[in-house]
Image (cartoon, rainbow, N blue to C red; front, top):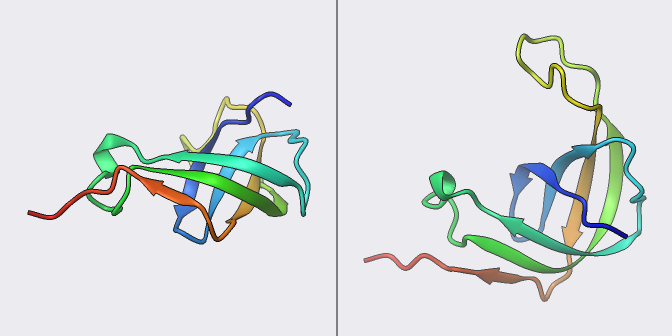
Length: 98
């Protein structure tokens, strides 16, 4: 399967909720390898810059068409994916406080 790229809406060490293009071939209980990269402008909000590891899909949510100007207009339809990380997920690029 080709990599699926999305936009994360909520990230923690427990999992990620992201928006991906529909249709998405992933379904609940599918096992995946997940790579999450924190954009440089958000680097100070998180104690890590990347998460890598095994995960599984919890659910896939349909995303209603946006009614606000500028929200997803002109883009492909999206679905929301709730993904839980396995306990051995690795946080990379930890930012050290000085």
